[in-house]
Each structure stands twice: as C-alpha cells, then as structure tokens.
Image (cartoon, each protein chain N blue to C red):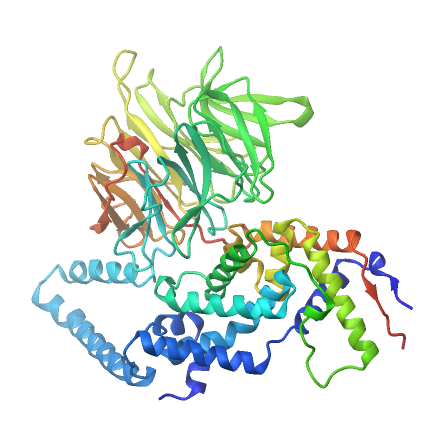
Amino acid sequence: MNRNLFGSFDEADVARALREAAQDIQMSASFERQLEDRLIASHKAAVKPARGLGSRLIPSVGWALLAAVALILLNTALPAMVPGRGANLIGPVNFESAVRDGVMCEGRLAALHGFSVSVTSPDKTRLIELDPQREIGELRSISWSPDGLTLAAIGNTNGGGRIYFADPDNDMLSVPHPGWPFGYLEGLAWSWDGEEILTWELNNNRRLYFINAESGASATGALSVQFFETPQFTPDNQAVMFYGADEAADGLFQVKRNGANGTQVLLISDLVAGPRSLAWSPRGNRLAYMEMDRNLGEARLVIQDSSNTIRTVIAMLPIPKGSGSSLPQAANLSWSPDGNLLVFEFGRNSSDRAVHLAFADGSGQVLLAQSAHAPAISADGRCLAYINGREIFLLDLAAAVTPQSGTASSPVRLADLPAGRGRTDFQMDRLQWQPIPVAGR
Amino acid sequence: MNSLSEYSALTDPVLARHAPADPQAFAELYRRHATSVFRYHVAHTGSHSDAEDLTSQTFMAALEGIRSYRGTGSYVAWLMGIAARKRALFFRGKRPEVGLSELPDLPSPGPSTDEAAGHRIQMDEILRGLRNLSPDRAEALILCFFSGLDPAEAGRVMGRSPAAVKMLISRGLRDLRTRTAFAMEIDHE
C-alpha cells in the first residue's frame, strides 16, 4: 500500500530521491546517435576540414622549444653585452607576457569610464564593453560580488534606475530581478557575504535600500545622517560606513542596523574630508582611512583595528595649513589581498594626481605613478592597475617596490579606455579587479 | 583522424578552443554533456519528446556560438545557460502538463511491472513537485541534481553567488518535503 512518508524524511532523503530520479532519465541511444551525426554534419558544412589535434600540437611544441631557447640565450648573452641593464631588459617583457597568459594578475579587470562599463578580454589585450548596443542610458558604480562570480552595475535610463548583473561568459548585462526598478540610482555595494546589495537614489541621501541578492526582496533603511558617497558594509554586515554629515559635523560615520531599535550612529573621525577615502582590510579586522588635518598641514593615512581602540598613522603627505586653500583629495583607497599594502590616489586635479603606496606596518611609502588615478590591486596581489590619461596601465608590484629604494618598476600599457557614452569627470573613473575567493577568509 | 581516446583526455576549455575548427572536438563536448542537457529539459518539460527537441536546439545553438565561449568559467555552465534560454523560449505562453504517458523510458533490463509503476509515480510526483516550487528554487535543484552542476556553476547560469544557490537548494528541498505528497514504497528487508 502506498503511503505518504516523505514528511518524515529529511532533506538528505529528498536530495537522494532527486538524484535517483535524475539517474532514471536517459536519452534513447538512437536519438543520441542521430543528434551527434547531425551536429558533425552541420559543423563540416560550415567550416573547412580541420587538421587533427595532433598535427597542430607538433608544430606548436616546436615553436615553444625555439622560443624557450631564445629566451635562455637572451638571459645569458644580453646582460654581458649591455652592462647594468640586463635585468631591466628582460623583466618588463616577462611581466607583460605573464599578464597576457593569465599567469599573473588573475581575473578580469572591470573599468568604469564615461558612463560605460568594460571588462578585459581573457588575454588582457583589450577591453570588452558591456551593453555595446547602449540600450541602457548610463552605467555607473560597478562592484564585483565577493566571490568574483558577478559584476553588478547601476544603470539609469530615462530617470529610472536598475541593478544589472554581468554574465562573465557572454559579457552581457541582465536584470536579475525585474521587480527592482528604482529612481535615479547613484551607487551600490555588496555585503561581505554576498547575500545583500545596498543602493541609494540621487534624490534622497538619507535612505538606503538593502536588497537580498537571491530573492530580490528589499528593505529600506532611513538614516539620520546624510551620506555623500555609497556606504560600505562593515565586515559583520551589521553596519554601514561612509563619508557624510549630520547637524554637528562631517566626517567618517558608522551607522549600525539595529532592526526594530532603529540605528546607532558613531562618528569615527571628523577629519575625513572626502569620499572613497576609507577601506576595510581583506580580513575585515582593520579599517584604513585618510584624514585631512588643516591645523598641522598634513594628510594622514590611519589604520584602526576593528574594535575602534587602536589607531596607527602609517603614512603622511603635506596639505595646506588653515582654511581658504583648496584641499587635495585622497581617493580610491584599497588594500592588497595580503593586507600588507595600501594604495590610494592623491591630488587636486587629474594632472597633479598621483598614485601612492603605503606599507601597512608603517615602514614606508612610495610614489608609484604620477598623473595617475583609479588604482586597483589585483586579487593575486601582483599587479596594480591605474589610469593615466586615456590609457590603463599595469605595474608589477611584487617585483620592484621596496621601502628603501622608493622607486617603482616600469608600467605596461594594458589598453585604451573605451570612449564611453559621455564625458565625465575623471573622479568617476573606477577600476576593479575580479576577486578570487581565498579559503578561510 | 585522431582517436576518440585522445579527445576524451582533454579538458572542456581545450576542446572548446579547438571546436570551432574541429568537429570531433565539438562531438566530444556533446558526448560529455548531452545527458545533462537532456535531463535538464525533461525536468522542466516533463516530456521526453519536448526534451529531445530542446536538446537538439541547445546543441545547435552551442555549435553556432562556440566562438563566443571565452574559456573563462565552466563550459558546462555556459552550455546550460544556452539550455536555460531555450527552455525559457519554449515556455512562453505554454503551460506544460505532465502525464504518465510522457514520462521517460526506464533503462533496461526493466523492473517488474509493479516497480515500473512505482518509479513512474515517483517521477511524476517529483516533476510536479518541482513545478510547485518558486522558479528560482526549482531551477537551482534541476541544475544541481538533474544536470550535475555544482553550486558555483549553477550560480553562473542563474547569475547568483554559490552561497545564494546553496540557499535556494536548501529551501527548495525543504519545500519539496513539506508541500508535496510523494507516494513511495519502502522495501522492507
């Protein structure tokens, strides 16, 4: 006698039942064979007959051996012929080759410029524009999910905003939840666990939308503090941080999400004077931010532990004392994946803006590139990408930078910045490397 | 012509790279993943014949678009993305019904008549149960249990993180358990 026994089973039993059902589904042998024959016939009709794999492998192996021999000769002969320059002759070539081959700087680099979003091709020789037909009015505020599988972007069309996800396999943008239309959206940020996305509208910088990435369900958070940039989740996902202002002060704020009890506001520093000048370390145990102290005439890069008790100044740059003079800006502050380095851009305008590096232990700082902005360190920590003019460059971080020398290796040109949909201030440019999840993070 | 064993030793990305010019490379990809695609379509349509049509469409589209696969990410996730789009087109304006007569054939040697009837009832209940779930939960279960994708690959197909897919699977299994009456026979030893 049949009886309903499923209610007494746990999920493992349901899963087993599904697997067994799946195993029972088989194509008929005749259909499988006929379809294979059709596919092969269609393939042959569309292309010329190809050489077999083996006949292509042998010439490829031969060329690879020849290239290896040539490389060995260059390494041994050239340094003797050009004293003092041997290492520099070979180093940049290897770095560029390693990048193109995917050995270094793993993952794709996403670029936001001129209201358009692009990602690097797998061989990193060019940028591929997302939404090349430009069906979306403008794109802004890109962000990779923490697992690196999804690139999210804000898109606004005719005053309405949506969050788009990029499909990394076909470089197309899609709307994961059609029920997400908002007003004109400014920016987005992922939670550390990849479960939520926050966003906000241009017409209200005291209200945040928290969207469940799986279900699309959204909740609204009203803040008593204005935010002047897209807030970031704290590592425990229980609060957000941003540069903003209340009635008493402007600076770096933390606002806790206390559910039914409302929010709890904490002013971390009233010397933080601009957006994009705060960054959590990859492990979420340290917070870095840039303070602008007009009294002392210095910009200070501060690292604070997550308990907000210990502050350390690890780098300083001069700024004008007193009020009146315009302040240079520090922006796009970010950490290396191992938590040992920080990079940021610093300057007043695009021509005097430079990319700096500071060692997290306070042992030194390095000027990496002048007339450069939008620095971003790759997920493997080997490469720094930045924009100079209308081009994107890559720098071998690991090879050249030492606190003693204070010099950097020669950069490699990656690609031109795509033209974009319209002219935008350079401060809207963003570069972001695809994350590669680290076990135990 | 190289032997089939040579192709069978190659990874999917390597085969995909050669597939535009080498029909046997594409055929190897087909042999590896045809069952996954077929099971995916059966789970959604409940119809053997509809699943065959959709499987054919999926692989013909994959053949046409093989150059667009860039080697980043799983090939099977790319292929299942095509299958998902073909399935979506199929269901526009259509409400599929599952009848026992449409259920797939069982592998031979076949079970006894009573066992066969039991299997068909179970399959019928499972497919109906899946259609009672939210589309996202059903899709996650079908991709992972019928097509054999892992959560990361299923996430690529669905545009979700692996964590989100795992949550969809957990909730989907729970829903199947609580909402669906499965008629099962238990063999007592």
